Structures are given as structure tokens and as C-alpha cells.
Length: 347
Image 1: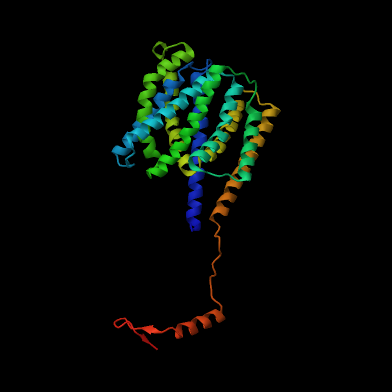
Image 2: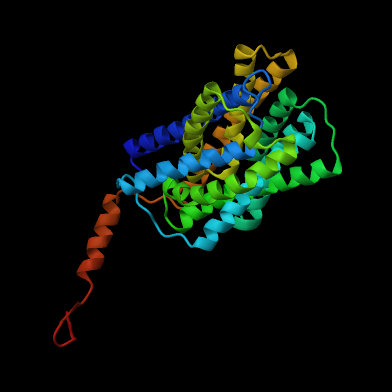
């Protein structure tokens, strides 16, 4: 049994990891909006920018290992390569899906990650979900759908890219948790091993993917001091975002990470309304309220499920009655004492 202080410390760490993920994710979206929008610095090279993110993350990991702040544990190279391929497919698929599909269908594909993650965890790890958890997930999906989904247009290429993005992102999040458990490796140590592979591959392939998306090569972009500043800000926030993602999936399940992650959508919509004069309709507000209610119900349902799983099947008695003590003494007095050396009974 965990002591009360340990439970409290664990809860504080969980909230801290989730808060860091939400704050850094929302921050990086705001920074990238200014960097990539036509009204900002028009840096339309999302895949290459992600390569910069992982390059800075890899550098931080290298410095941390060199100074002894983190320890390096062995993970087979083939598993790191497999994970990096899946993660890069997720990033590229998401970028292509956003380009080829309407915003409405892109949001629907992101919402479908929750049931896909649930299905994958059931297939790969035989994980079961209570009725309360399933209902709360449905409430969250409906709430986020109401406040984000607008027009829904789809084409064959866009549909294929969305499927690749959803499957690879779901598999990536499940793999993070399984690798951490399998090799007893910390979140930052695992990130330090995968970031260099992802950085190299994205910096090589990224410019070509971005050329396909925007029709421009990054070498033709005129870099300004403002753009450099926002690239550095984006990369700094990406380190916190990547670390907190690994932390959260190590502490929560991939499903919990997806559900709690939709809080970021609510925050982005609210900040977009406050900072960028984005329209916030009654439908948006009602959807956000519904999503938050669903997240609260989900947290409650998961806690109930944990308590039911840890409840002892047969309650143990803490003390004996006087009658039981008397019978026990009488039984001990009637037991024959055996001689250790001769093995015969002395009555």
C-alpha cells in the first residue's frame, strides 16, 4: 500500500507533468501561429521546423548526459529506429492531412485518435475499459467536435493521409509507454535516444515534404531577426512539449493522454479569441463546456476504476477474539513436541 505522503507527491507530479504539457503545447501553437501565418513571418516549413525542434531537444539531451544530470540506458537500435519511423510518419501525415483536407475533417481525424488508441490498447495489451470511462470519452469527443468541427470535405488522398496520421500517432503514443516499461527507462532518457534519429531524418526529408506542401524551398526564404527569434522560441517550447509528452504517457495511459490533451484544444480556442480576435460563437462555448465536463467525468471514472482494481478480494481480520485466543492456546498445548536429534515424539 502507498502511504498518504507518497500518494500526494505522485498526484502533484502527475498534475505538474500534465500542466507542463498543456502550457508548452498551447505556447508552441501560439508561437508557430505568429511564425507561420501570412500576417506574421510566413515561415511555411512545418516539417523542417519540427526537425529543428528535435535537433534542439537532442542537443539538450546530449548536454544532460555529458554533465551527469541524466543516465543513458540501453535500448536496442532497431526499436529506436522503428519508433522514429512511426513518429515521423505521424508528423508528416498530420501536415499532409491538414493540407489536403478541410479543417473540419482534420479535426474529426484528430478526434478519432481516442477510439483508435482504445482499440489498439485492447488488441496489443488486452486492456479493458469500464462503461463509465467509455461514456466519458464519448462526452469529450462530442464536446470537442461541437466546438471545432465546421465544414467537412474529404478526398481520396486526404483520407489516406488522415488514416496514416491517426494510426501512426496512436501507435507512437502507445509505443512510448511500452518502451518505458519494457526497459525501465525514464521519459527524458528515452527522448534523448530518439530525438537525434528524428532530427537527422526530418532535416533531410523535411525540406522536400515542405516543398510538396507549399511549393517553396526553405533556401529561398529570407530570414529576419524576428523570424529567428520565434524559431528559437518555438524550439525552446518544443523541448518542454516533447519532454512533457513522454512524461505524461509514462504516468498516464495513451488514452488518458488523448483525453486530457483535448484541454489544449479548449485553451487554444480561448487564447485565439483573446489574442488574435478569433470568433467565439455560442456553439464553441457550449462545446468547450461539454468537453470540460467530459474530462472531469473521465478523471472520476478512472479513479473509481483504480480503486475497484486495488480493493482486496477477501478482507483480513486485524485482531483475534478472546475465544479464538483460548482455542489457539489449547491447540498448542496438545501438539506433541518433536525431538530435533532423535525425531521421536515426547508427550
